[in-house]
Every structure is written in C-alpha cells, then in structure tokens.
Image (cartoon, helix red, strand yellow):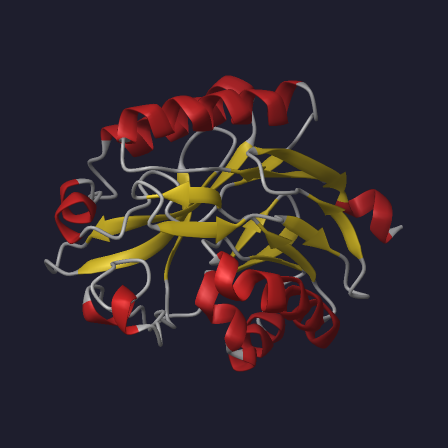
Length: 256
C-alpha cells in the first residue's frame, strides 16, 4: 500500500486550510500515487483561542468541511485519514477526534483522543492545543480499522507518551499505526523522532507520524514539522523538514 503523509501549516481560517489540504491531497494522489493519505492533528483549524476553536468545532455527521474531505477521497479514489478535528459530540462535549474515510468517501473510523495534552508552561495554560485537558473531553475507546486487508491503529499526538495505548493497538492486530500530531518545536526536537521510533520497535508496527509545521496564532506558537514514516525496525523511511509538503512510501513493498 502506498501511504502518503501530508504536512500542514494549519491556521485558524477554515476555508484557507481546506484549500491547502486540497492542493496537497492532489499532490499526494496524482504525483505520489498514494492509496492512503494521512493528515496532521487539528488539520482543519489550529489555534489556541477557545472562541475560535469552538466556532470551528465539527458535528461529524453534519459538517460541510468533512463533506469536502469526503469529496477529495471520492475524487482521487484514495482513503484519507483526517488527522483530527475539534468534534462537537452529540452529548454536547468537545473532543479531539480522528476521522478516516474510505475511497468512496464514507467514514470508516472515528477515534477520540484518550491522553489529552497538559502543558507545563504557565503562559500556555489558556491555549486549547496546549492545555487540552481544560477544554476537551477524554475519549474512552482504543480504535482500529480495516482497510484493504490491513489493520490500522489510531492514536493522536500526546498518546505517543503512553506506551500502553500502543500495546493495546498491537494486541488488536494493528500493523500500521497512525499518529497525527501538532508537536511543539519546544519538545519536538528532543522527543518526536525518539518516540515514534521507540513505538515502532516496541510494537513491530509501521508508525505514520503526520505533524503540523511552522507558526500559528500570529507567531505565538510553533509546531516542529518533521513528519515521518518509521519502519518496525525503528528506521526512518522518509521524512519532511519544516515546510508544508508530502512524503510517501510503499509499505507493503518494503515489508516484502
């Protein structure tokens, strides 16, 4: 399976973000020949501002933005993993939720982030993305999904620091684990690659890390970039740098 990772520099403008996503999915499908395209955490809107995050929260069964993503899946006949969005649940709570789409645009998987980020920096305590525990509700279910004969595991960003999550995914049969992220530059340089390679070796799975890059909220915060796909051996197969773009590899071919 040809898997592509899209690295984004998402901002708080939903329409502009959808245009960026559309352009890079076009590249992933047409130039790279991807069969599955993975996007980062907070792909549709990345902001620390609570009012903006609430305004752009998505009701998963009634969202024009998700309909646009589904259209891209159908247009290119590719599976898409929408890294995550702020979901407005039917229970009235807000969640950080991944949504996967099949090649026909139908939603085939949802996962609500189970380990919410809590910054140790007091100056970031009011930021949605840096103090999720004060804004979002916690998911309660480890989730996998089947796609073309392979089992994919769901995780999001801060889950990476919780090895037991990945042990559960492996026990559920996961072969490829997706980890959409908005890893900060502060910790990304130190921990991002180390965590992905460790989880790959521990589980014997491919790790697909789609990360945000660049600054957002008028330069207040910065994401690390360096999206990568890591083999079960811990080898970094392919890696972005710190600009938006697309990387890809044929995972089945490498496994043979």
